[in-house]
Image: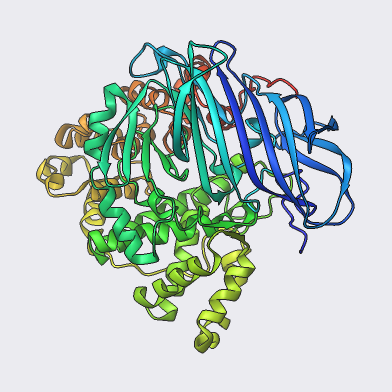
Length: 609
């Protein structure tokens, strides 16, 4: 077997590979820790194996047993973001093809980067605490000692002890529950995941949650105060699942449940198998559904190939939109995506290697590297290939064959490219003309600018230009009718276009509010862009609204740019730092780290392993 290289992992990936995890968790809300025991079933990949390394981060390791015998272990030097290697000396020598069960007893840190502990006051119900995990990309190691890289896929079984007032849910199939025989004030919940997954897809939620059925294979979970509204919002889930199955084949995970998380979750959603995370700011889940095939079923070798997960998922998400809406709508979404990519390139800098489609992540924190680049540059590249190779129907044939060929495995960009050449063997001359280096390994915007159908965008472009070119005398010509017939995506596009222009004058922004009443709109995507337009025009009345949005939800897509815009408003720079410092204890650890960097604020130090 070829050596697996993963710059984000210390684990012995070429020596052995995990086939199964058996997890025992005791969730302690008082101390904000999980007392854990994990049994890893490892397949040996080389002869004379006598030691192995696992990934950990801020874990306290108390005991290691290998095949029933006590094993000596040592904890290596702590890395600034990749955690600490756990080096295990096996009490016996093993040979290729053999299996060993390594059992590690440990405890997480109260500051584990994968876990967010919420007080009752931070929940909708205000009575019970709440815990959720987020392991992508390299945070599972702060919850479980493991081979924490996407090339390793394994099944798992888990039992989770929680206070009996609370419910545990995992990204797996529920396998029953019982009173905890060690403590009658607690309940044990059991889960099984029979489809092999990488560690970053392990998910745990504990809280006062309940569920409603929304389809033949789907339930929505939330706090009871929000669950009925959530069931209404996600009623179309089965339609989307069937549409995706018609495009790329059967859904293999059995259950497709949705969990509506508290608003501090830092991402739009997370595609945990059997349990998609979503937040109040995300009501369309076609992207997370698409991950059931691209990302979860076909996974990446390491995080440098993240575009394979996200580019294909955005492509499939927009194909679902094409089926349920129209081709024009798919094209319209692509236009918006291109703009988001341009903004990300501007933020990183057009020569920054993190804007490569396949970046080098040697000594790079995956959280710092995260952006929409792999999503939108990845989609743009696939759309470019679609145009060259015969259109959407032809290219969807390739996508389906790609999923069938690589299902249940983890692959690299080169393996994907080899299959592209094999599938389109009669079009090799076309493929040879593709600027592979320009797309894959060159920073900045793509080497080719895709041409999208602008039918749905034209009205947005026209309205934007009216505002940009208007003088004071023209302001009276704007009225409510300008936006009356715009859909929410079109209103988002109009505001996004304004953000790509020079800031419009304060008088224009005040008039826009007067005639469109954008402050009253609750849609987070619209509100986020509108507040940025206001801040760039230096409208002081928008500042408290921006602080409110930046702190009442934690989605990085909104929180980081809002804090950056507020920090750029010189009059409010110090207040921005103060507001962040006041609220950071309620924010997710990943969000705290990234906003601290943006505002040049020192982070609270985590405890050493």
